[in-house]
Image (cartoon, rainbow, N blue to C red):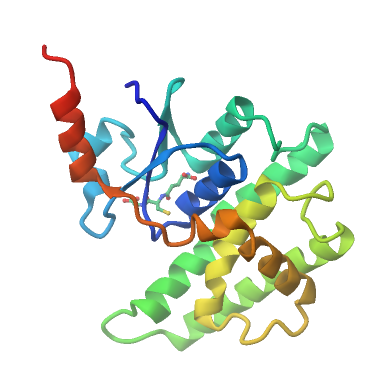
Length: 229
Ligand SMILES: N[C@@H](CCC(=O)N[C@@H](CS)C(=O)NCC(=O)O)C(=O)O
């Protein structure tokens, strides 16, 4: 698949897509955003499965091919658009950055995902208070880890400057505020400051909650411009 402009197939609801969008904007890449309607299960349609057989967003298509998985896409972007570099060159720092990204995609994602289905779209029987308390405690433990790392690391997670680790962790932690987790940032001053600094960047404004062109429109236009045969 070759596209005149790179395309990010994403969902406005997805933190995995949010972080890739942050990286694209930090790097100043000119790309098109196409919205995949997750509640409508557009990600499981044959047209989308042809792009990603796993049926998940984000997917990024550019002249080098079709790329799936947020970490794979971020690493690819760092190669294709080296400035500014968002992954450290030093092996130890790179391992640290990848560990933060992994933590954000696993433990931080799980807290967010399960609290969402307890508090924002609760089960018919209502939220389970014990489960919510456990999840919030896990969330606070994770925030404490980020707080300690920012304190030790000059206000950024790795290498003393903004990187993919910050953007990935931020994308998952940003939504924690909806769960009153924590109700204030008392005790998390470094997290509060770091969160405000990232949210003040133009990449945040250009990414947060951004919906792309509908997938159906993109498919129709593509079919209309495809060469015959
Ligand atoms: N490892 C993948 C996970 C992607 C993922 O879980 N995407 C979610 C949205 S945040 C999704 O597409 N969910 C819809 C589904 O699985 O049907 C990545 O990092 O990109």
